[in-house]
Image (cartoon, rainbow, N blue to C red):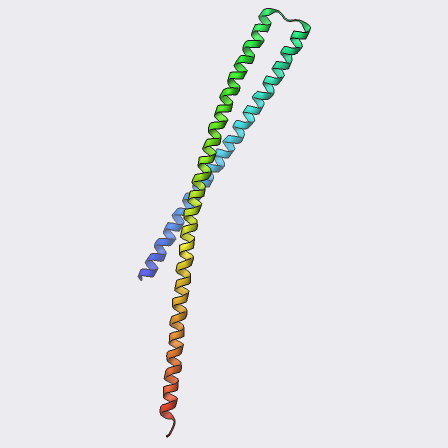
Length: 155
């Protein structure tokens, strides 16, 4: 195998590995985005539930509420607020993971693009070498034909 063929097969192998790494990074990114959407949905559900429960408290207060029930409402709202804070933190952490996964995917894509660019350059150079070699063969054929014609021509 020539050095050029060895380099090409190594480049193909590296390109294949880079493609696999890019694809794996893409799968991880998709999972992270899905988790982000689920976390966002949970946060929205908590917000809705808190708003509904707060509305119930407002209704109960308009109708008259005993201190023990008022305390229970307030305690439950406080626990919902704590859950909302945790859910917002979880969403922020998940968004950070999505950003890291996106950057990893971009990095793998850039690596793959570099290998593809290098492969294209090598192919173009091989085509140029082949064209030069073909032109040299044609030039040699024309030169030898002309030499034969000159030697056959009587003087």
